[in-house]
Length: 242
Image 1 (cartoon, one colour):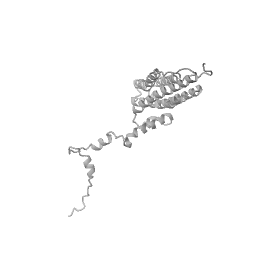
Image 2: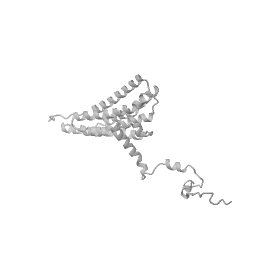
Image 3: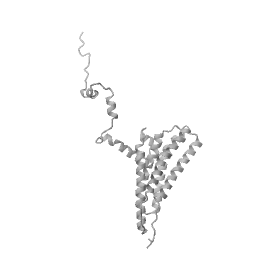
Image 4: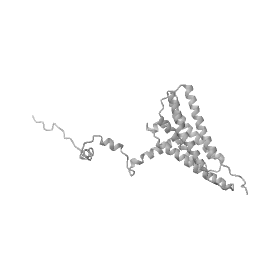
């Protein structure tokens, strides 16, 4: 009996085989995995994908309508929180320096840059963006909430994004406008934090979760008030001194 046609032809991709052989001629079955995890060159689209992810996450914090943990897709990061916090620091310093220089000019006085403002901004922003969420994580972990430290850092870090436009607009010479901006920034970022942290806090006992939530709100409110009086507070005299 003839067995012609009993076997199907197997197509071999020469390019695939050559890719799986290393330069020394040995076969590497994990070559595809290595190719996927290798650093992408700067001219490739994949290299810039992470920046678009950060922007998408920033927009999700400014308009907190979606669950941020779902937006992150189980992939929290420290890249965004670090650069957002750093940007907030420099925007705070630059915007407050511009505002103070304008106020000094309008008041007829001499202005000198105060680089202690920059140091203070670094301390305040980085403490809130990294130390506070670490303490919240430790507290929730102690009470059995099973939090994720990286997710907690991402929540606080990305939650700082709203302060970038708030700081930039703080140069407006209207005290009421600056209070409104601080209220908007503090309100939106506060809603963002509470909305995304509550599922974690609710795993603890009701009384414990309420206490932690109140502390989160207090720390958040303290940051908003601190930024207002330290960086968004200047006065233009009605009648400049002669």
